[in-house]
Length: 123
Figure 1 (tube, rainbow, N blue to C red):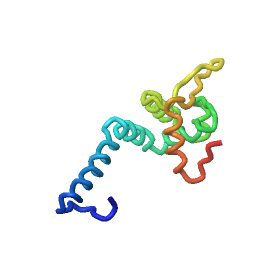
Figure 2 (cartoon, one colour):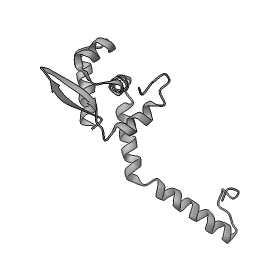
Figure 3 (cartoon, one colour):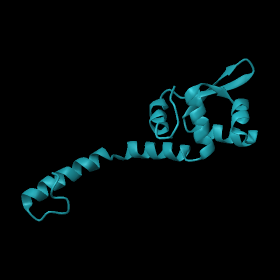
Figure 4 (cartoon, rainbow, N blue to C red):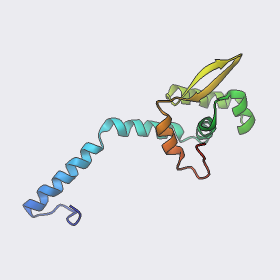
């Protein structure tokens, strides 16, 4: 119902209006909104967002983050830990280096959010 938008007095219109709002309330169920909010909070820090954008291109170790981002290693490690604890990234070992990659279950959401970043290529 596109025309009556603000608390219609007519009973028939009011019923349609209430049905429309009830459907909107159901679409905004708590769990998906909470999950999206958590994801946005994790990516709200510029350094964490840069780390994620790097990982969308390929896997990296902390020393590569350090080289590209030019931030102290402890600051990078702290933010990598936040992303890992939040379930956005995971790690594996290659030789003596711990390598980080995007968690595949979080990848679609991350790609959707990253697509809003100007100049960010997903390739």
